[in-house]
Image (cartoon, rainbow, N blue to C red; front, side, top):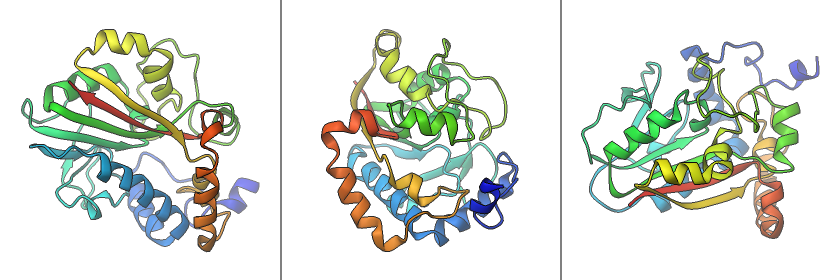
Length: 255
């Protein structure tokens, strides 16, 4: 009953894997100004860290987003056909020539990829030396594990042994702890298996803003005019952000 009351109008009970849900979320992201500001800050991280070298820029899982407003040359893609994207792409089988991309960008997508080993090999084939994978993903901290375990609909399995995920739907399946598993818990394995890649940055951040925005499914819990305050507050938390961040900014560079 509480979840139903807090649900953003028109979102309760939707099939997460149906393309019509993404179409609705695209409209929601334009209506909810607090949430849009969160995404805009996330996108600036991509824009500022996208390498200035030859090659195309690919976003995997563009979904309802608007990253192309900041990076106009962006190739928007998704696992399903959506009329506002440029391509239908499976992250484990990238339809690009070797050394043709300078960056792959993803927001909350890596933890849905069923075979991240295949994706990382494909990215290594397609991305030019000096190019990057830029991610914003859920992260495992003392604070976030409470949220992801008890208040979020997606699985959060930090003890999972394997990197591979059970094949379910593209959005309903996943493991919110997968980015932390691959790049932190199993970092040595990653470095041994993917020697062409260097983990350049892992920065936990954003402990409150996304929660307060209500995300794509819930009503905003804070007015948009308060956004700058919450942004300021989170910046003051740098000394303890490793315990409080809900997400992480991740940069992986091909050497």
